Amino acid sequence: EGQGCLVGRLTAADRDVWAEQREALENCEGAAVNQATLAAIDTALLVIALEDTTPTTPEERLGLWLKATENRWYDKHQLIVAKDGSAAINFEHAFGDGVTWLRWMGDIWSTMRGTAVLPAVPEVPEAAPPQLLEWVVPDGVAAAARRAEA
Image 1 (cartoon, rainbow, N blue to C red):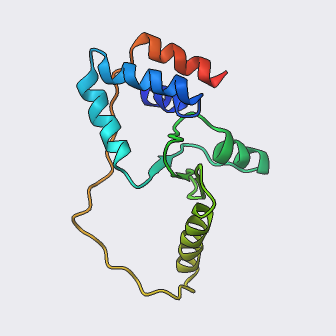
Image 2 (cartoon, rainbow, N blue to C red):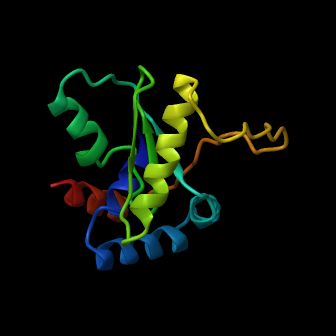
């Protein structure tokens, strides 16, 4: 919820619409905040979307994993995690991308079941913690995001 969700909707819009609104975010009164947030997203390997809901039916799962525009950033690969820990990946991909991500999910599944064939990877204590992303969203960008949802 909040302004970040509005901005994320724009990544599902027409490329020209998103490019125009991104430029507006980068040049508005709160440009420094938005530029820092966009830089954090642009340099991230993937986006982790934490959801407050737990889908219980196939229709709910489809809606949460594939159709949602709230709490998403479609310019990046996304790991979407529901409240109960169920997860999915959503990404726009080229031919070879699917193999990489399916392998990764298969390795995670095997590790969770205790049947992993790869050696454990040591923890990296200096990894940056997750951060809440902040936005300053001008009225015109918010209006474009609401139109993108329609």
